[in-house]
Amino acid sequence: MCCRWICRAVLVLLLTGSTGRLFSQEARYVFLFIGDGMGLAQVQAADLWLRSQGGPGLCFVDFPVQGFVATHSASHTVTDSAAAGTALAAGVKTTNGTLGLDTAGRSVVTIAEQARLAGCRVGIATSVAVNHATPAAFYAHCPERESYYRIGLDALRAGFDLYAGAGLKEVQPSDSLGARSLYDLFSEAGYRIVRGGNSSDAVALGGERMLFVQPEEAPNPSSLTPAIDRTGNELTLPEITRTCIDFLGTATNSAPPAPFFLMVEGGIVDWLCHANDTASVVAETVDFAASVSLAADFYRRYPEHTLIVVTADHETGGLSVGKGEHSTLLLDVLGRQSASVIGLTGRLKTLRRRFSGTSVPWSEVRAVVCEACGFQGAQALTPDEEEQLFRRYETSFTESDETAVRSLYYAVEPVADCAMRIVSRRAGFAWGSGAHTAAPVPVYVLGAGSEYFRDLRDNTDIPRVIRRVAGYGSR
Image 1 (cartoon, helix red, strand yellow):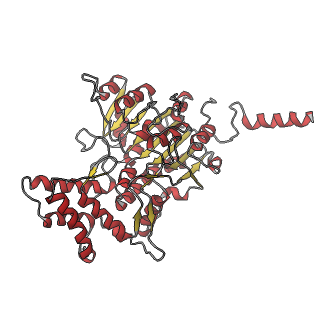
Image 2 (cartoon, one colour; image 1 turned 120 degrees about the vertical axis):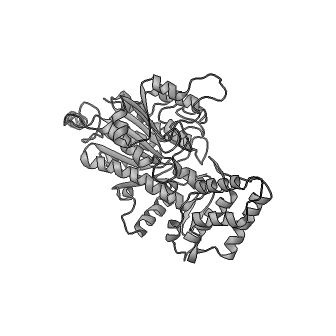
Image 3 (cartoon, one colour; image 1 turned 90 degrees about the vertical axis):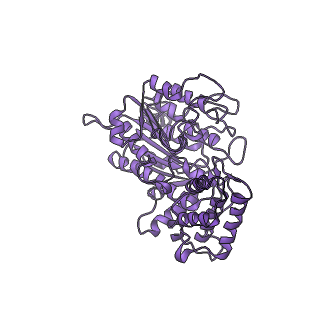
């Protein structure tokens, strides 16, 4: 009996080595991609769309390890991004609206913070504001997710190597006159602030630490331009991701890159799901997958030491792919849409300004909507669809100055809202709500230690496994 226990102890020591891990391959380069609001239906819709165009589907749907996790928070069956972000960042359930704190209000340690303590370089990237809920969950410890200025200060305190995204929200607090600008504070803390530009230029300009954001003239400091609305000059999530990889993962003197942890959020997916804009959600999910592809390219250079995890914080909108037993998807309908609900709202607001002081003619509104949604030629509006749009026009453009349909993050023109619902119906998609749901979300994993993600059940399992396979806390 004694001999058996001695042999077992020797075996454990041989397996674990000096670090206490049970893994022969260490994940030195960890990528965590979070599609905000991206449930299985969003992934399936985008994958089907790509394949309908004759090409391969989303790169991550072919990852060897796949599963689903529950997303509920400690306070609600349906989570918000702050609580879900905290679960993904720290492996701890908390209450909706809370960042980086447990239910007792105590700070929790995130995997990004642990990676930094373990000597890794750390980057946090997003397509929305750097101090928005999901990216903030990896560095902030705050009871209110909308305390953007305070969250920005937490980013400075965390001192990560790289922050990247659309910009900073609430650069100066509205309730504190004379407070210093977050951009000034980042600069004084030694961050090189780089606004736009290509990846190589940004990395060349960056010092030891960098804040990479949109140019100052960008229309929305809280969000990149949705993929479907881009004209060619805007900063994109793939460009941000490439910059992060170049900044964190460049090899020097023929030596492999130093270990790093990078979180990349596709935040606009959620914004468009709230508005039930199917075509734009598909375009944004494809754009998100293009960012994952860049990590996959890095993996092919260092396959034994790279881990890529793709998941979501929650599902938004209750999207259904197909309606009814005999429903046929008409994916080409999505391809005719050329503007998101955000972009179409902007065009209609421009129309309002052009006719300031007078009624905007229905013919003008109709022309803008038909051009943006592809309601032309063989796809012209049916009499019933035209009646639906005209009723919204009468309410919004003639009976009042403007009656906006509120989404979580912006106001949508009622006519634009109606137009997107027509596109979804035509294409064969249905939405259950404009809010988050409790649906489980998918997880896709590739690389070092991926086999240990096979038995995931809850979103809190993801950072726990990352900790183990990357050795955070044991170096």
